[in-house]
Length: 397
Image 1 (cartoon, rainbow, N blue to C red):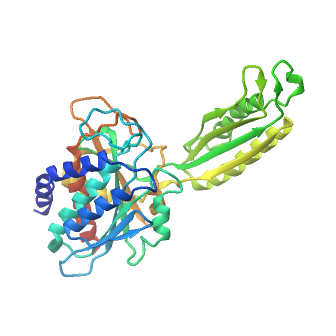
Image 2 (image 1 turned 90 degrees about the vertical axis):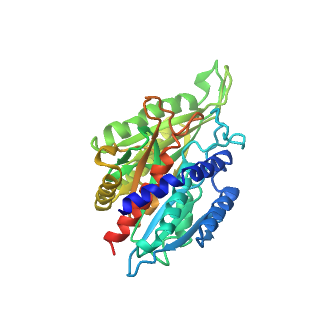
């Protein structure tokens, strides 16, 4: 059976997958600077025998054509490449050699899995017709993101894919299990930058100042009503502030306060309305206190939408490959992901790959200095994506 062939090929390359992943993990690079990473991925693709091109400076794309007679579709597969500005605190022998940079979100896993998938598909190229467009994308972690750059540079054209598949590690899910959520899955992410300017002065004479600290503090409480009283309660939305700088001293009220925050939602229409409501509320409230406000909303990634029909099919194929007991439902996630940009242009499925060590409830979350996924999941990740691709090509031929 073809599924058994895929499993055997994935298992046979385990040591190679470990070598690739550990090299990538030890040599992480930040968003928009993945030059050595791109060189390494390019060398691996050349070794497989796959032609490819650079796109958007450090991005890579190419086509793997099946050799089975017939005319099949074009299916896209995507992995991200960048790391995070985190100082790694694991004790693995292949921990980051780049001070202050770490693959703490699993992108080393994603690249390795896709390289393994392509090796399997290359070996089985006589078994399918159609084309596989592979995308190694830079700068997922930093808006406006590498997906937008690659789309603008034509990664989804000539040829245009029928659909696109992506996977992401999930440390809360045991290795060997796969998670799916159809429809709206991940949130839009916008960054908020506020500057409240009043008139500073001596802390002993507050009647002589326009205190931006008090105004900003009242404002943060007021803004929470946008979520609690203006957002549809059935619609997930988050408004959080993580940075508040009032750079005075114990007896000096400063002239201004700067505040940074984030707005996240699952509805693009409400997202636009919330931008206008935030700007209006902030400027009018601050003006009522005699101060001024500068509001900058940096738009990040849109809502990630898993097309229901494709997601149901991908789930079915996963159950065929791994067994129904290994496939689970997962909830919506208010994190952002720039795979979302593809999902607004193509039918898309973005699923989660379990990487929690078996027999333990210990979870090392994404974006932490101790993130340590179970490497056995690499075999599952590479084999499953290859199987999904084969079934996608077959059923759409």
